[in-house]
Length: 177
Length: 335
Image (cartoon, rainbow over all chains, first blue to last red; front, side, top):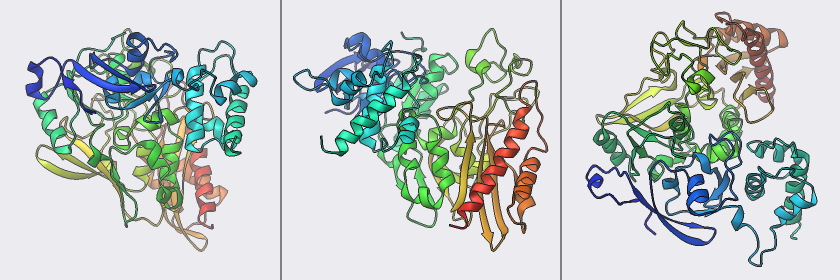
């Protein structure tokens, strides 16, 4: 795949800079191609142009974690990621974590089982951060889970349930479930 | 949606191309590494580059080699990766801790160790802009913080123009270990100490560092030191995680028998730039590290502090942070 945004304006390419970009990426397993303004965030690309509204815009300034997604398997804040940076990458959002038959991911089910949300607005970001926390090996005890989920704020205060859900899911994976 | 001013974009794949592009772009062209500071400030209208050179696709910028006598850390390496480097964790815990205690894992995954050095202040007046005066944002307009809510602002290195705190942690730890940065510009490569990278505000707070606009930090080097093993980065915050420092201390010790042979102390969260506390270091030489000598060193570190209206607590908090960091480092010298 072409890793670099192709200039779609023509004239600007002589300087090496482009005012309009063409990007390709794989979002939740689907190939996506779009022309975009360099200013566009990955969050706005996902929500406004790909209709993937599961990823939430909280602060839009990297302070709340609601917009957490994965790029090439690693968690990032989509609000502070230029969409152009995801060119050529694999992006996973909350819409991409359930099983093919639609059944929830074990961590999604754990959020239900452990009452890990009230209003739910932060939940997609919490789950994407929690999945990464487990994959990174940072979900071995409660203190570590709290530390590595500290970038995701929950104003309802469902933290106890969130930590319990991540801990239980990590333990089940460790046990081979 | 698009509150950011329009800009053009390029994503080179080599350092040479990046440096050439910054000249091609002319004034108003900026390097963008992780983007966690720059893109944020572009959304706020603080930064208004006409063109952006994205450094995220330059593999040679991210090379890390910690196996030799000196640490060599490519500027494009991710904070989250360097934080877990086994050599840093074991031989330079202050460096590793300064990274893992910064930001959140999402931000550390995006942000680079080079870009982080030039992270801009979190002063709320700077970020907000009008109607608040800010000499850093709009030179000559005044400083709303000096007459305002200055609780998180600096007490060291302040001027009548600006009391904004340097927000980073990593540069503070690097300063303690006399780290160097290698910089590339159109004229070639040069090296400068991290100690010479940041500026005190003086009457030009808008000029925060000593690099030319077309110079690029390509790597950070940490020379051999006997103070790496017995080191720590202690960061005191309003909440236990994911907050900027109210006070922090990077401390490294070389202890021979009972007495200190070499001490390094640098302060964060309390100064307008990463702040080396040399007089405090000297106070410990040939002395044992005890609660008394540690507290004395902490007080010396803040001897020149100039508090404002709401941040006087940082003098005592900072002194105690230094003292506790010294006691932690001393414990590590006996392991």
